[in-house]
Image (tube, rainbow, N blue to C red; front, side):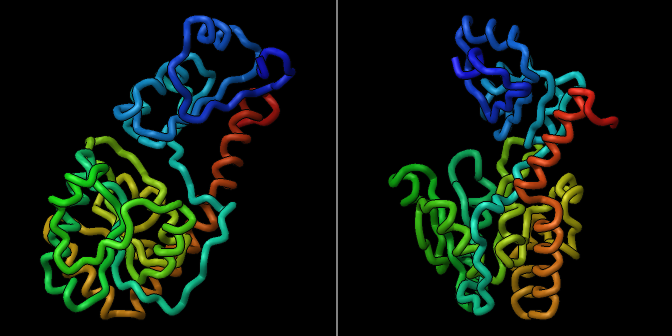
Length: 272
C-alpha cells in the first residue's frame, strides 16, 4: 500500500521474502525502478530469487550467485557499518579472537577453533572465542582446549568492541563452495585489528594479502598467528593498511553511493 499510494521513483528491496501471487503481480507491474540486494548466499536463502528475477537490477554478496542472472547484476558484499562508532583501542588485551557460528555450515571454522585450542599457542597467548553451534547440546561437543569461550551470542556493537580489543582476528567463510564475503571481513580491519582469513583468492579483489590482511591454508594458521604476535611492527603495518583500505572503500556509505550511481544510470541521469 505504501508503494501503491506513493510516487517513488525507485524501490530497493534488501534480502526480500517469498511473494504471494497477488504481491508478485503487483510488484511486476509497478512503475518505480526495482533494485534487489541479496545479502545472503542464494544457496542458503533461495527465496531471494523471487524478488531478484522480477527486479530491474540486482546486487549479490556471493559472487557465485551472479550465475542466476543474465547480466543486470553485480557483486556487492556488505561493507562495514559506519553508522556505528568503531572503538579505537591501542592497549589490546586479547591476542587472538575467533567469532561466529560453528554450526553445520561452518565446519571449517569449528575445525580451526579446535586445532587452535589444542595448540601450544593457546597456552602461551590469550586466545578467545565468541559463537555457538546453535544448541547447548552441540556446543558441549565443541572442544576448544585452552581457548576462552567468552560469549555465545552478543549484539553487533559488542562484537565490534571485542574485535577492537584483539591484536589478531581470525575470520573464516562458510563451507558451501560459493564465493561469499561476510561482514567481519571488513569490520575487523575497520576496528583496528589485524585480519587473518582463510585463503580465498576471490577476496583479493577487495584487500591485498600480505599488505592489508593475512591468509592461511591447511595447517598454516598456528605458525602464522605466532609470527604476527611476535612481530608487532609487521602486524601493526598490516592492521593500519587494512583499516585505511576498508575505511576508504568499503563502508556502507560507499555501498549506498554505488547503488545510487546505478539507479541514476538506469534512469538515464548519468552515462556509464
